[in-house]
Image 1 (cartoon, rainbow, N blue to C red):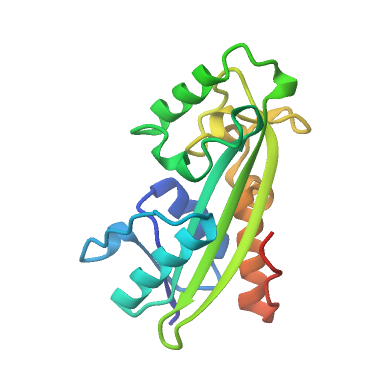
Image 2 (cartoon, rainbow, N blue to C red):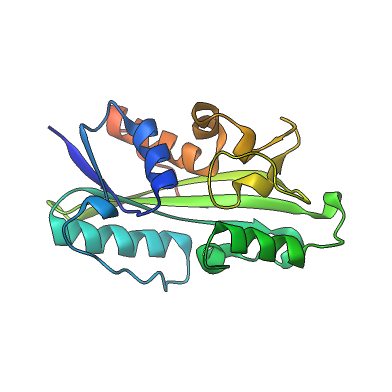
Length: 201
């Protein structure tokens, strides 16, 4: 029976990843399922390094293969912010979105280009190997929240070609098109057919 730790305590993120990887692994653990608390400060200079640090520390602690991600929202009009600090842009999703909308107040829609980036790090403690996977999604930041699904910045991340926000898209569809979904697709190919992931952008 194959097990994996999904290195997150975010229930929305855990649910998305678990659904996407069902059939590849039999048992999934989130950080909330583990007996001991593992504190990992995301203080590295890139998404990939933060994901690697988290996966290795947790994988070594529990002796179970671990998948960690670090992702962020980069807004062109804000010079790429919040970026690496996306999760620390406020105390919760509501505060983070409120701050983002305030900072973009008065900025026209065509100047509100944004991109989600996701980097996954898969660490296997038995042989101490690490593999990286990447995905991105381009869109715009809307002027208001739309939809009740997803988590994080999803309600204000607009996809003009679909006429909806990420929070208005069913989970199965989101997992196909999102930044994390694309990184997970690369991870699935690696796990099922051994396809080595391409170099990080």
